Amino acid sequence: MTVIVKSKKYWDIINASRDLFWKHGFRRVTILEICGKAGVSKMTFYKYFPNKIDLAKTVFANEVEKGMTRFNELMEEDIPADEKIKGMVLLKAEGTHEISHEFLEDFYLDSEPELKRYVEEKTGEAWTRLLLDWKNAQEKGIFRDDFKPEFLLRVSYKIQELLKDEELAAMYDSTQDFILEFTRFVAYGISKR
Image 1: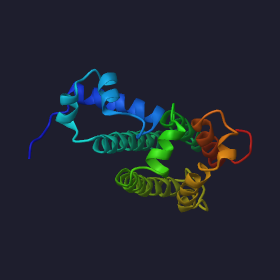
Image 2: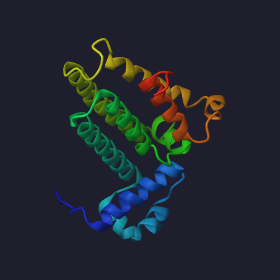
Image 3: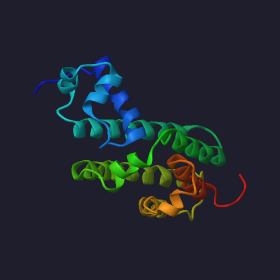
């Protein structure tokens, strides 16, 4: 098996792809557009990725891992629970910055079957880790004892159905605004912060 060192060009491809996928979704972005934004040739692209689906999987896995690392760092900070919750909302805002409805459709809703399965698998792994982190936070007295982290998991899966509701989506200026409304509602209810 050949081991490929992850060079600057590799990361240029990853970063360019992330930007393009977040803005335009998976299906609407071509390998040629990715190469152009990354400043690499198609030959360089294929040196690192056999196809666009494998690239999308890598981009998604990197984003999940970055998000989990930042979440774990936040949970380890010696700050009050309300500051942790604010931090979680901020992390969600940063993770969904410039996210498009096309991205959500392609990666979560009606995407390429192989990519959708992968996203579901990675999302499931991330939720398993989050559930453990939330339960640990409960044991440390950070979150309420009667809070059921599994409830958030179930509700988060339901948001995918809500994203298909065109009337609901039309209430918000952007997909990020819609996601943040949901996040703030879960974190704060309808009370003033």
